[in-house]
Image (cartoon, rainbow over all chains, first blue to last red; front, side):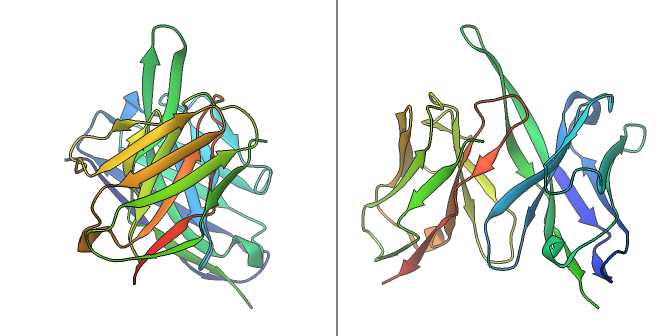
Length: 126
Length: 108
């Protein structure tokens, strides 16, 4: 059974830092790209960061670029989100998500989220 | 960036009703669209991908259709467990994802 367990959230002051963790089990972790998606209170979903299965490639949403960094440790089946320069607008529940890669003969590879962690709340406030 | 717009934002319905949610993209995403269900305090759950392919284990009362810029999620007979918020998400381009703002299905 696929399981993703998010942790590390909490209350942090504006300008502060926090590291989120996601522990994965039930699948061959290194074979999957992984991502973080966030949801501000009462709002919709926003993709934040993504990392390739090997950890060699990453990308971030413009809203967090230069402030957040995603990483992974395939020996521990863990993915991390290091957040710095936190702002009030970063307040959200952060979800770790597994990315499924589907191949279509005529179109190539396409990527979407198929399993999500339970989320961890980050509150940025003084 | 591809923008996704869902309608309605809130939908009131009764058990047994047929429910339809619409999702529109501001440019063609062909059929690269997923639908998710989210219950309060819980993580989103994948229901449908490639616009109309039902994820394993999802009840057959859920169906998706559409292509290009307009898509629909239909629940053929609403069940008590289906009251939730539903999100569409496009995945046309490599590592670029955007979600609709969500549609809350509430009890009438």
